[in-house]
Length: 116
Image (cartoon, rainbow, N blue to C red):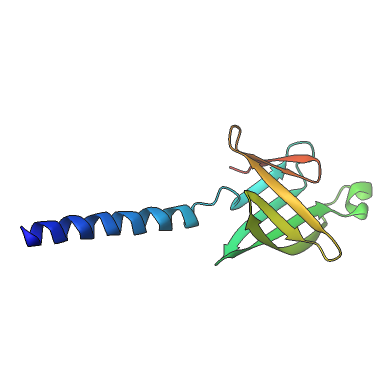
């Protein structure tokens, strides 16, 4: 009987630990995203332990004029708080929110859809 109870307790404990780890790894922000209005603008969000890195890629002014593929790439550190991803852009903090009902991000007034 004691062995049976120990097995049950251990199984429940391992299930709780595994469920918790799954939530950490499967953050809905992580991935590659494309601006729904300007396909040349992308976001790549990666996780680094408790923090995130957001890499924003946008066409340069020259690329817009002569239609080449030159891009300006910026990397920002970010943290997850209250369901939002908070980016430190230097002098200010920007927010990225995730809409679960359509699996898209809202950032700087733009909608970003997950890149497939």
